[in-house]
Image (cartoon, rainbow, N blue to C red; front, side):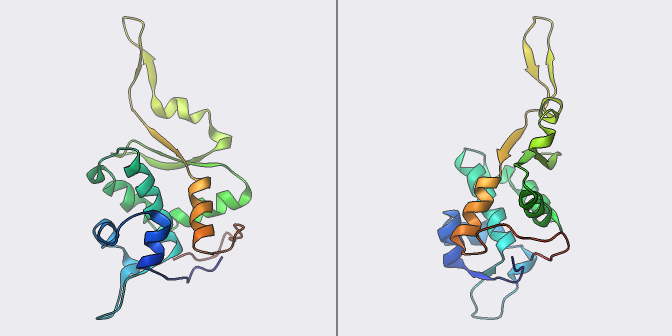
Length: 165
């Protein structure tokens, strides 16, 4: 997969289901959004993957203001590259977050960690309580859909040292 693909707003809209206004307001601060006067914004493959993840969480009812810390974490260097590399190896990948101070990817080999992430315990009345509510979002289908709709390599063929923008 080439890391240099740049997609127009109409492509990002078609893949994410977001409006042009949402794209601008949700992602205006992305470093890959540099543009010349009169030129339309361009989105990298990684940008569109991040926007699709955010759109899926928003569709499930999560308030937009709660997604901004997650967006910043996903935009960190190497986050999407790591995700794509792990999917390419064959792992089922999940986003695990409480949208406050815990952000991470987990894979199907670490499923037992989910119990510890959530932090269940039994209270005095014998009721199981969740100490740290977590969102666990499967990512393979989201990533594969984005790549297919953008007509980027249909198989994930990233190499560990390949640069993704």
